[in-house]
Every structure is written in C-alpha cells, then in structure tokens.
Image 1 (cartoon, one colour):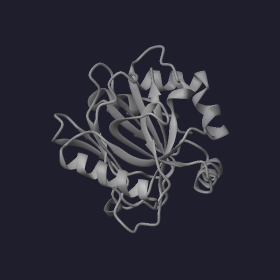
Image 2: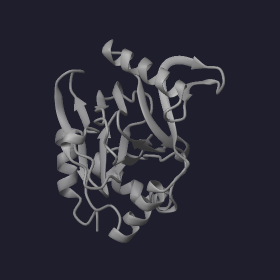
Image 3: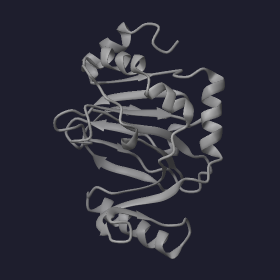
Image 4: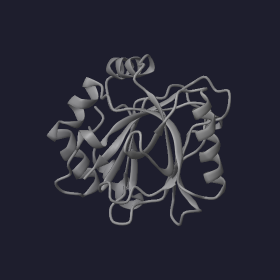
Length: 222
C-alpha cells in the first residue's frame, strides 16, 4: 500500500519540502488510467504567451498540431523562453479518470497528504486540476504556482521514460540553481510545497522526434 509507512515520507518532506511516493495505485488500475489517457482524443494543444485571447476570453491559446497557428504560437513561446519570460506549450484535458477522481475526493487520502506535509485542512478542488500530455518540443517554463494552493501535486503516468527525453521536473531555490530533479516514473506521485511565495520550478523541454508522451495528472491542494 502506498502509505503503509508514513514516517519516511514525513521526514523527507520536512527536510526538503517535497517528496515522491511510488506505486500510488495497484498496477492494474494504473494501467487502466494510462490506457484511457493514452488513447484519449480530448487533449488540446495549449499555449500560454502572456497575451489575451479574446476568442476564449482568457490568456490561454489553442491550436491544432501542425497548423499555421501552431507553428506561429510555437515560435512565439520559444522566443519568450529566450527572453526568460514565463510561457508554455503542452496538451491538456480537464477530464479526470474515475480512479483519480475517487482517490483525490477521498478524505482519507487528503488527510494522509496533510499528515505527510503538516498542513491541516487541505482541500482538493477538482476544477483546479488537469491532465497534461507533453510531446516532442513541449515544455513548461519557470514559475512558482504562487496563489494556487499550499501543496502542488503531480501524478505521473509516463512509461519507460529516460532522462535524455527531457520532460524533467526541476525545482530551484533561487530561480537558477536546481535543488531537485524528478524523472517522471509510472504510477508515482510527487507533492511539493508552494505556499506563500511559491517555489520556482520547471518542466524541461521534451526532445524533438520523440514519439512517447509524458502524461501526468496535476493540480493543487489549497
């Protein structure tokens, strides 16, 4: 069972403000979740450029992969990275697999996270969660998650992922120096502290021509 021994996770989180927990679901359930998302047609390629999108009344832009708009927005976000400005490109869906919904809506599960982190009365808000899919060229540039909650979480559904593929979660202590790096391993959960001013972190760019997808369920506990 994923939380059969809490103390080691508590100790790591207290020391580092972050901990990764393996084997969140039984193998057959994790496989079902992965299969559903891997075969899903509900993902949309999503861009953040800092520019308002009047079509959707938000700062999020969408484009079909390979379209002129996709290439235009890709060029835009790559230029922003070169200027050290927050931006991203990856696919996203707001659909939550029933197994994920069942676990995260369980008060027992949330109480266990509270016990590990020391934060009382944590709250999961489904509307603030999403599932991401990073493919070749996708990335999430440095940001802090300030104002989103006290705990950020990432449940990984990537299979046989290698460090050279990119898509690595990296946390920084001063916006430059990396103090933690997490390889996205199948059926593992990473939780980290983003209270107050948040914590600088990034998902590095996935290498070109890769045919694998980095899939993860992410969100915050307020």
